Amino acid sequence: MARQSNPERVVDVLRTGSRPALCDDCIAASAGITNRIAVNPIATALGLTSDFVRDKDTCSRCRKAKLVTRAVKG
Image (tube, rainbow, N blue to C red; front, top):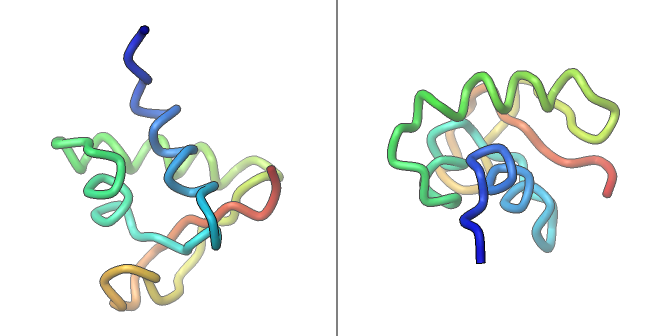
């Protein structure tokens, strides 16, 4: 079985269960992406779609007020 790409892993994390609002650091940790900086361009691109929202809010995992991304569809 082929390993998922980083964008696929990010989407999977954001679409799980309660569709959490997560900061880039927490997305990286939840997705098992060791280079947390790699998450920023992925999350930014997702925020430009109609399936995700990216804005300033409280992260569901670390509870810090940060730029977060959350799924709204799919």
